[in-house]
Image 1 (cartoon, rainbow, N blue to C red):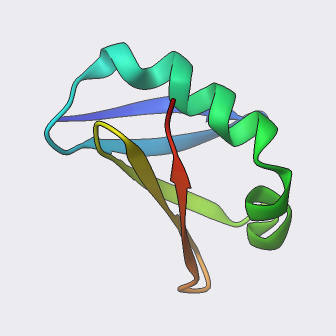
Image 2 (cartoon, rainbow, N blue to C red; image 1 turned 30 degrees about the horizontal axis):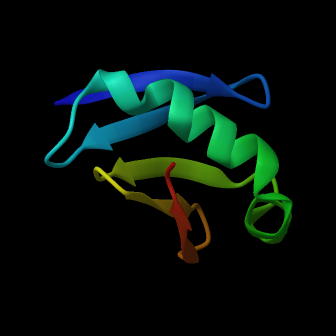
Length: 70
């Protein structure tokens, strides 16, 4: 399943892998408060693979990062 969310006023595609839309608030919270990861990816965040305990963020330039979801 796939869904778009708004982050930094841009639509980001979220792929749900073994989870559902109930983790969207936790994902947005993790993106807001994980400044190190989101600063390194800059405004190039393209899509996210969301698992039950973590998210993998993909940037347009091919970089990726993992952040925990609580």
